[in-house]
Length: 136
Image (tube, rainbow, N blue to C red):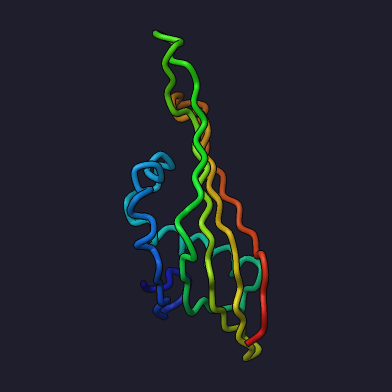
């Protein structure tokens, strides 16, 4: 995929693992190109923290972890509907810094959307954390 922040290609692999969970990931409301928006968000966070960095590759390590929140239906409290979802993507990234060093970062991009059933109250939160890093 072409980096939106710079004119270079980012090697993106492993996103075939989202196939079985795509129907749940859709609750985030971000669209069908899951690999595109996850990589774009991860790159933006890397660049926010290290402006001279260049993301070379992103690999999805495993199927995304998904948690859903349900609330009772107003019309029938014995039934429930999804009202929130949290999705975590574990990524293995290769980063080239402006000083010439190369790094391997393991990171987690997490999205949380609450109040799906209410247009006014819903919001999407993004959280990015580097779990580990090593200079190559």
